[in-house]
Length: 187
Ligand code: NI
Image (cartoon, rainbow, N blue to C red; front, side):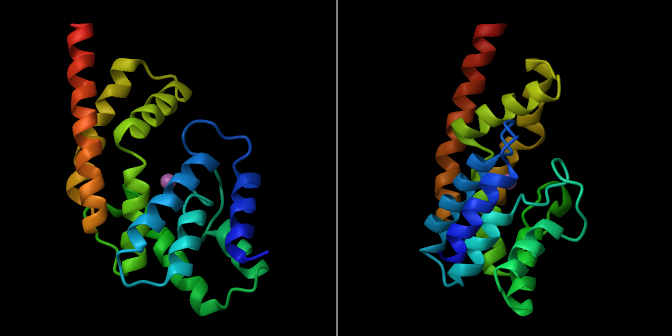
């Protein structure tokens, strides 16, 4: 089995008890978004794929690992050399929204995976994940709605690649019409 298939199996196992929108499905969306973006860019496809699949393997909201221990263990067990491992880890670490405010990833692979993750935070899937996460944290709908202004409506302007900018535009418009309808129904 090739390493990409191994990574897909690994994340299924790793996220098997997660449902709040940070789960194996989210990782697979990010992987597919990353493939779609990467086709239009000059990049190392293997780094993009592995960074996308491992991007939440050490997410601090889910795991108490340090120094990307889960991702590193997977890469080491699958014979990835140290130099490539560092490039994958660098791309993984450029994804987090909270830890990278205003910073652009320095590599194209990092830019692609960051865009891929942010696309899954907006549009219809973004709305679904936001309310699932809010519910998991015991927040009311009104409280959860604040997350749109604080983060989701800002993401469109933070995309790195042309492909992601185009996709983000459509998802952004969808969120605006959702919010408009929600406000109409609840005032
Ligand atoms: Ni993610």
